[in-house]
Image (cartoon, rainbow over all chains, first blue to last red):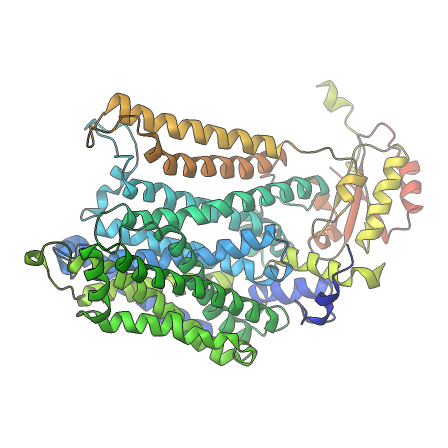
Length: 457
Length: 182
């Protein structure tokens, strides 16, 4: 291990002092294996599961009656379903960014947050995937989206961004799942070896697939993991770019813009880090993981949030500038209508949440104040949801023909599906932290070996 | 059949070490002493261990490349066949093989093919899933996923001899030496 650069030692460490291979293993695996399930867990899971049931109920009603139960109509045909889809899939991006890009950049601080960030990605993409399917109108024919030799003799239209979306999201989910599972294999073996009951030993043993930590296996494993990271990096950039093309390829004013792909990707990372902070702050407090998820982690994430937030702010600015500079009447009107039209308050709220509020992160005192950081993360989550609402609704509700203008307002079923998807997301996270190690144990051992390495030799 | 007849009485001899440094040194000296059929077991990937055991570069990158190429060519080929051969739809007079529009799906399928190949290839080369393996007979082996480092010289190694190899392992000052049954 090379000597760390001078500046590194002055920074706050990525783990608390005095940890050994055994103690990190114990501390993380005990959360899953020996700690009794707390009352707080049961309450949290019960509440989120109740919302999940609400989701199932709302979906059931939707399937029985049809998409008319939502507020969508002409001219606003996209509504909450697409807003929520873009919001959820954006949230997923931070998980991949942390696990893949920070791995390639050799950022060691990622180690204690990558596992649950990846889980967050997986669950967020699962929630995201629901919405376009439900929006299909007849979701039970979802398989028509895939190219298969159907008896009708028709194929998907590969020139359409909506078909690109199917491939992008399906690939993203599959690769995220692979990445997460491959990362889990050695830890599942640890749980198998430490489990006290036969049922746990068998379950974790099956999942670990007989992993025994052989040097040859590790050798191949590390290469495969690095390759996956290298593959996931362009993938994550492509996914939100393709999502943005759903808008940008259309000729609707306010959508037809080349800035959309980079601006969507930055927004995705922005909202994703806000969600990682929203989850990490309560988790570290409840499970006393302050030694693993340190102030440095929170501060680094706050910095990334600030940086991506500025890119997003630049995107907003350029949207307005181009609307004016293009000299296009419709573009100009759409921009003006966003600011002062009937949905103006949503626009101003999004500017407040996404551009103004995060400027507080310039201050180190704010970045190191955990409750304030938590509130700011929630504000950014809200702001990014509003951003997608503004993009989807304001462009559609008043486009070229004033005779076909209209208003959109969500119904109780729109809200039920949205709230229900949050419930599903949280319920899956509760199950995850109860049954799987939320921090990568083997990577923490590696980190311990590297930080303690010099004193041990 | 012949192989089964010459099957050694035990799987091998296993030495347990406290630190990764000791294990790497032990692996290097076992290699220097002429042992070839051996493996080390560690709780995390130890730097320098694969080199000490002379594991050659793996085939994982090649398999990943092949998977990516299958995804890429298959993806483009599928779109070409669908859009230009089997189900041609004239969209605004644009060419049927409108390749720029086929890039996103081709790209996604390239990544998908490569990622699946990387993971499945890694698992297949490692022989996983493998529910049974002799090393699990050693009770202390559970620590290989916690904080101990093991070196196992297998009995099928031509130089293996129950007494001599045990003596050799003892010279490496391990914490413990165990016989691994089949």
